[in-house]
Image (cartoon, rainbow, N blue to C red; front, top):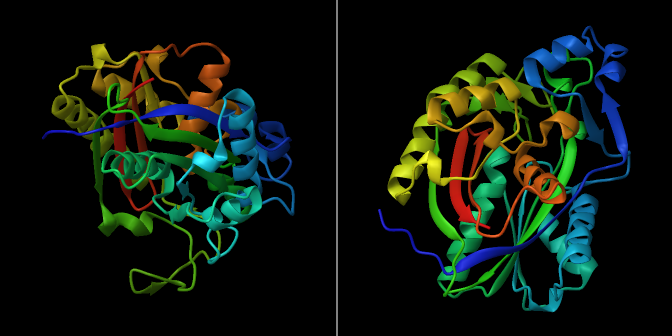
Length: 327
């Protein structure tokens, strides 16, 4: 399969709330402990928004962080894509709210995208497509989640996992030196009821949902889906793009669970040390885990110009998607 790109990522920023929810804090809320959480997930703490802080607020702060790190003229942005499953409202979209609050030109398009934990990768794929086909010159891609607001803090199986955060990237036209090298995606929609949060409908697969307005996850089923599906998909992405795992400097999977990530590495030929993650101190932030992992690695001076990276998101839907990029 041929892959076409005339775009590359030229800037990245992120934001996480100040409030920390540590494993020791959770010990006081549910029947759990630090050792149990770390052994099973790799998570030590997560960041939590305050009562009146929502996705739009975090997204704007991620854009402001991006602006502080790079020279970016927001007037040149002609498309805003926000990946989220926790928008402030059903409408207006988060992207429209960002457009208004940051004063983008009226010629800038906006869209929200819901692909759960694969959201950032899907949004990058859409941005690459829009830029490559000439429908956009410079796109702003944001992934942001306030999972704490849909988490049941009496359910120890889920409350130990999730946190809040946001990441933002600029994707712009570059015909001579494109940075998108390959993409892949898939889904298992028949298993969507294994990870859900109700909305207008409280029915799942024709039955009344047993959890209303909070995240529900069948952890074992989702883990099985990931371990059976993602390694094969990563190998397919590499093969279709003409690369091997040895050509990739950094593997950036969705930061859901450290044991899961290590298993994927073993099955795909990536060294554990090559995996960039964000879960240890930010938790599982769904669509935001991958940009947070990139942001963290950039701050630690791990990523250099020309590094090839394979990003792979997977989760609710059940969906999965990957891209290979050159930084």
